[in-house]
Length: 537
Length: 100
Image (tube, rainbow over all chains, first blue to last red; front, top):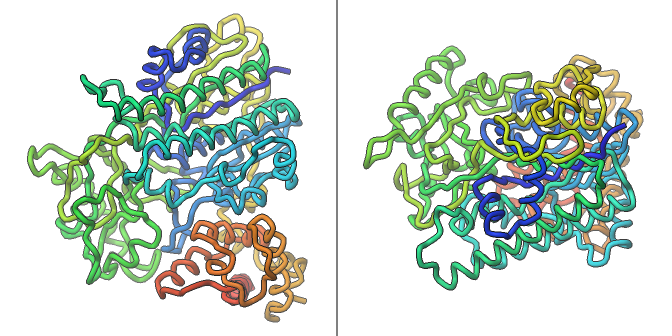
């Protein structure tokens, strides 16, 4: 039996920042960790967004299969209403379940779309859950009460997210006080690390995963303080003070990493991974305004224009129903984070939209327009770096839930779904945005030392973890073990073993999405369930 | 086919909410008149989490996003437990009819 394995997640971590922090002595332990392990870029999903990317990383399946395409997605195949993704939308087995099913314990801390928690042999505290729900959505049911008793200073409110604040920040809106923003994440990470440390000491597992998401949150708003290329020649006192506070956040992460590796022991494998990387963004593309100018979109009467000084990209909830005239709209974007464009088709999600037979030609024309006519009004350079159709970006049984088109902007940013006064606006301050290239740094027995490898994919992480644990790799995973990370001697004795396919999460009926499956299974099972609950005789 | 038993559904919903009351730092009795925003102090994301909890209990998908969005569109001041109960009655009956 091999392992244990620690999956040390740094949401949005990028080598550009980490290498600089190592070079400046802010993260000395990380420097030693990298020198004695392997590193490689880890390529994210399309788009490089937290829910699809982390879900791909922990399932070894792509979004078209696991069904998590965005923070918000359609409630069902025929609904036009958007819901926040949860574990009930996840259609593939997670690494925690794969490990737990084979008799080993697993622990999962702060992963998105893990509520309600999977009932694994181990423990789960999901991320992106408001404080009122942390206890309800943790597994086992008495876990939070135990942690409250055992961990001094445990505070579910510090642990959980204030989504109203975080949505604004992720969309690039200014937070009044940068240092408070940093401190909020310092305190939150300390809470997560306290839990990790306690659980590693008192409930050892074969696999433990944790995500520290402050990396992403700091980089979004404070990229100008973290990107070494943006360091001013003569930094102001304010700059130095805020940067020092950012560095304090990373200094603490470095200590968490060191303590985690020590706690895990010399036989452990530690994988530092990120769901995506980061880069700078200097402009805002108002995609719906561009679609309006091109004749694809009509605003509802009275739809407000975003103020000139707005830096936000738009909170997407219910936005398109109020702001758009869907009877005259042929393409629109409803969600800032997904960089996705939807084409309403009559009869699919309501009676508005184009006729089904018009779909292919309209989409083809829109792709061409995005490539050729969505340009910088000053330089006439294309604003869109790439366009993917749904079939290209989300191929799989769940692709109907994804946008019809997904775009990558020239500066990697997220477009705004608000009604802009213009198509393109320069940001007054550089912010951070997601980039497809994240990090994979591994350290453990049989791994190469001080080697940089070719990029791996998020889907490669699960097979690599399973191999390190000495467990069979399910045959239906899409990726493959990162064999180059291991020494030839190790691979001679530990060649990967392949086994039966993953199993469906228990909340899903076999073979199909919930509603369709219920139709197939007929009334019997549904009625039995309702009878068992006492709602019918 | 018989209608769902509203009383059993009501009791179950109140049990779910009352069990969670302590976590929410809410000590008053929860009744059909209790407002999830005004009384329980929910934010919109809490309402979404409540939807997941209810779905988990019934082990089926419910159009909770549609329910919340429509409440927002008609500028409802609050959503009461009774509103939730009405929504559940309609949704579960519809779901049952679809499969019968």
